[in-house]
Length: 358
Length: 233
Image (cartoon, rainbow over all chains, first blue to last red; front, side, top):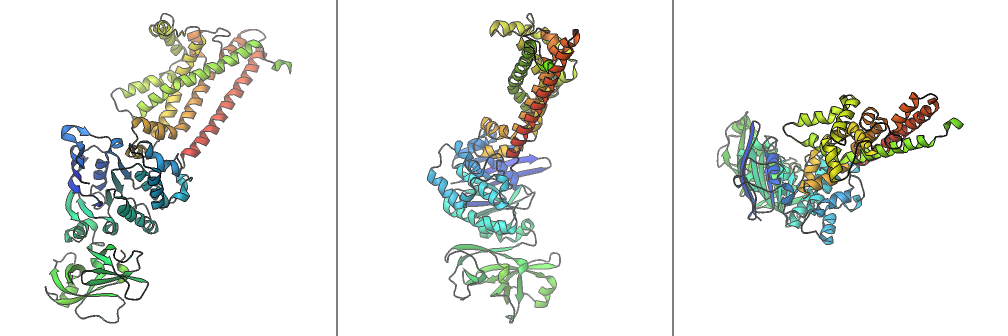
C-alpha cells in the first residue's frame, strides 16, 4: 500500500501546503493544534476540497484537482474515526456498528464481524444506546464502525484527545492490536508525542500547514528541531528497544534493551521480544560527572557528551551518547558551567524509571 | 341532553373537515420537506424570494390568498385548466379545492417547523455517514430524516390544526357548499347567520375544541417520544 498526498489549501489567513507519502502501517500527522493536521486529514477523507493537488492510493487517483478529479467521500472507502466519536444517536450500538456494511461493495463476512467485535471487546454493549456509553466505549464503537465499513485506509483524528488518562490507557492497547492484527493502513492525527511514539511507524511533523520533517518514527521524534512542535515540556528523544526477559527479578519492573543499553521501566504487559519505543523527555534526564550513589533513580547510564546546544531561556540541551543511543538532557546553563561540560567528556545520565512510561 | 345530538348535516361537516385537513397535511408534506431542505441547506441567488413566497399566506389576508387561488386554480385559471385537462384534477367548488386552500395556508407553518429541525441536525453526523459509504440520498434517509422526526411531527400537526380552522381562503376559493366544501368553520359561520342556529353553532364549537385539543396532545406525545429516541447522543 502506498499513499501519496500532495495538496494545497487556503482557509482564511491560514494555508496548508503539504506533501508526504506513506508505505502502510501507522502514519502519524504530528503537530501542535493549529498546525493543519485536521485540515489535512479532512482533505484526505474528502470532507474538504483542496484548492489544488493530488491524492493517490495504490495507483488509484482519488483527487487530482488539476484534472478535475474529486472522488466524493462516500466512494473513497476511507474509514474515519473522529475525535468526538460521532455515533448516530438514533441507532443503538449494533446498528451503529453495522451502518457501513450497507454500503460496502465487498461485504465483510460474519467472521470479519466477530473478529472485530472481539478485537474491540464490544459484545456486551451491543443493545445499548450511544448516550449511555462512557467516552472510551464510544470511541471503541466508533473504531469498530469505521473498520466494519471495510475501509482501504483508516483515518483517525485525535481519537484519544477527548478522553482522560485512564480512558486513553484503555483504548491504546486496542489501537496497537488494530495496527498489528488488521493490516489496514492508518493515518493518525495527534499532538501527543507519547501516543505517536507508541503507535506510529512513520511520522509527518507539521507546523503552520507545512511539513517540517517526515520519516521513520524514532528518527523524526528525536530531532532537536521538533522542540518547537512538541513544546519544551515533552521534547526529548525516542529510542527503539526490545522488551527483555526480567533478569532483575523484580516483577514490578520491565527491562527494555536498546543496543548495549538496558532501561528499567515500570511494568508493561508485553511479551519479551516485542519492539517498543521509549520516549525520554529531556527535562527528565539529569547529568552527573561522578556515578551517583544513594539516589532513587534506577537508570544510571554511562555516556560521553556528543554535543552541547546553544543557550535558550537560560537552559541548554546536552546530547549524550550512551552505548550508541543518543539521549538529550535539558539542564540550566548554570549547571552546565558548574559541571564544566565539554564535548567528549565522560559522564552519567540519570533517569527516573517512573518517568519512562512506554 | 337532546341538544347535544348532532344532525346529519353537522356530521357531514365534521367528516369533511377531517378529510380536507388530513389530505392537506399529507399532500403538502413532501413539498414541505423539499422546501425546508432548500431553505435550510441551499445557497443560491433568490433564496430570500423563495422564503418570502412560502411565508406570504401567513401575512396576506386569507381572502386575498383565496382570490389568488381562484384566479390560478379556478376552472379558467392557467394551472386549474391545465390540471383538469391533463390529470382530471378539478379544484373549483370541490373538496379538493378546500384541501388545496388549507394546504397553502398551513404550508408556512409546516416549512418553518421542518426547517428549524433540519438546521438543528449536526452536519458532522452526516459527514460521518458519508465516510462510511452512504451517498447523499442514503445520508438523508438514514441520518437526517430520523433526526428531524420531532420537527416533522410538529410541522404536520401545525398544518392539520391550521386546516381545521381555515375559513377565509377556503370560502373565497371554493365557496360554502354543504357536503362538498362546507367545513366545520364554514358550517359554524352558516349557523350564526340563520335564526335558531345557536345550538348547532355551539355543538360544532365544542367538537372543534375537542379535535384541536386531541391533535395537540397527540403531537406532544409523538414528539416527546421521537425526541427521546433522537437525543440519545
